[in-house]
Image (cartoon, rainbow, N blue to C red; front, side, top):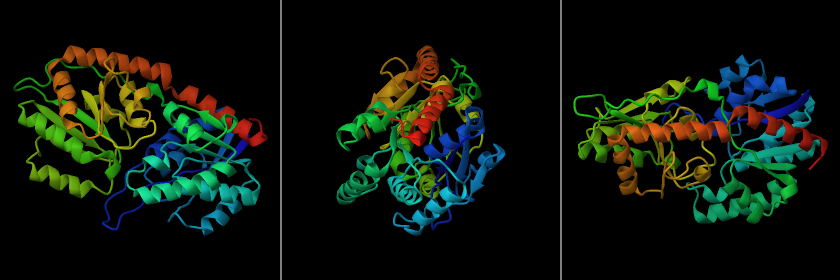
Length: 383
């Protein structure tokens, strides 16, 4: 068995006391937890005790260590990572960002003499919550420290791979692209109902699954639902997730009189049930790697309207299973959504194409095999 220290973060607790959500890398790590031993991998998972997905790691029978990254400059974490690596005799350390965690892990791994693999879902240059000056500073530190120390860097999309190669200067022998994947059997194809959206019938359900924090552009999602309602469409916006913006978004819904048109589900352990309620996914994010939520929507047979960020072009084939729009282009989002509301046959055809894309590109089995191969190559020094 190859022993790997997997470091997984959870969203920080806000001073408002608002419940935390989950991140994409967090969900990806939890999804893979039950299968590693079948592939000869023994993970030791570093994850906060407060995290929403802790019981999934524990339930998979994995060793789970309470671990918090804290601030970006949490230098004592370097020693703790090194200590944990030596204590558990691991042969590899794997992190999935943020870049500050990757840096701490690389320094800790160097101290312990253990190679490090990082999965980089989102580039520092795409961190919309940072000022341009901070982005340049963090990027410089990343390129001159973390990305020089790491044994292997995994991108989750072709776009990310090209950025890491061309901008960050990582040699291709240390760089790999592994698409995110999910267990497709957990998601049933949505049966599209032609009666949805008609007068006095059930509304067309437009959903989004994401952490409730600024980069996801939730106000855009709410505005699209409001304008569709104002145009006379019978719609329900389904907000699936939890996070720091919950109270702000609820106030926005109240101010626009959208109580009958917006539903907050909060964090859901079984998110597949939420997709079964949806007729289409509207993904308004300003920042993304390769979205796990979009893959889940693909597997559920949903048409998708999404912003042109990260690896969206590798998940949505324009006109085949959905539409891609520029960030903030609400008029075009509304146009595409309205057409899908009026045309259930188009929703069904695009949904069928979505499931086909999920099967062809985003299976969990394929992702697991590629990670296992990458782990062994990195641990043994093969490139």
